[in-house]
Image (cartoon, rainbow, N blue to C red; front, side):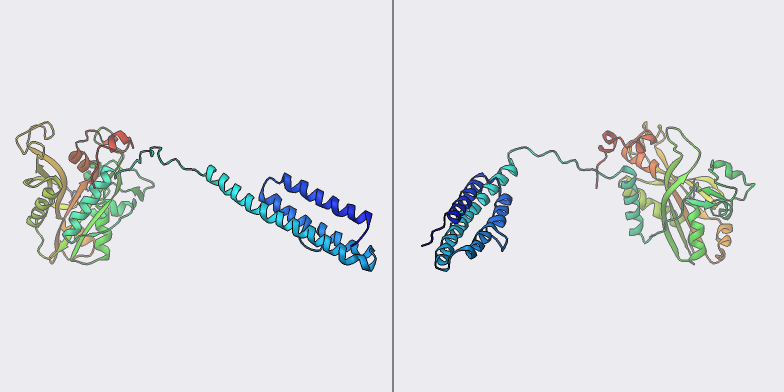
Length: 348
Ligand code: DAH
């Protein structure tokens, strides 16, 4: 037994204080804070109380130590019980906070679709790569040489008036045709050549069927013995894949400086089957692309022997193809990003 009025009071006061604080704890953070202050380490209130032992007579010390240890055990017991309770409570609160109502209907998922021009590019690339064409990506800023001169259209050539050009300087321009890519390819690669070159082209032209920026796809085949017959055979396969089986082509004489002979290619109207309707303006035919046998001068400009080699080339308007294929009557609809329009054309 020990008898010390001051220490008994201190012990009772500490217990009272702990009791009070335990009762007021709001969360586990405060609980651990409590443990830290009262129970843990040499600086805790319990340890501080234990140090008072020094002021007691030797025979009283064991009794005092026992009382402090009992207080400590009691406090630990309370702490553990509180810890369990807090954890349970906090978990319950968290469940409440994170509760998901699985019966609420989901917001409708809006799935986009590919742009009609992208669909056309994908389809053309697919068809022509199936025939062994490789893709060549040209450049949008070209020199006058690649866009015109090397394509047999020198500075004073009247055919330059066929295309209203955006010049950046006397030498540089925004390409008016993907045909410029033909020259780059033929300068670098010797026959056999079989390339497809999709890309943007630019012309100062703006109405319901023309836009200052539009897409083209150029095709070029150069090898020994290539003729207009090869072009026609390839085009027949092409139109059947794009516009449906039974579609045929016809070639009309035309003029492009870089081809000789040059042709305008029509396909039989896929809307009426050739009997005449509003799409084909009663003619039964629809113009789809320009083409021709590569002009010998163009081959020579690229260092290809025109006695040994020959080729054909064609240029397809991508927006025009999309408009025909999907029944779109104004090119601006393809640049407007209006989802009511674009959402209607939905194929893979
Ligand atoms: N470059 C021509 C244009 O933009 C289209 C064209 C016609 C390309 C005939 C060709 C071709 O390769 O042989 O109007």
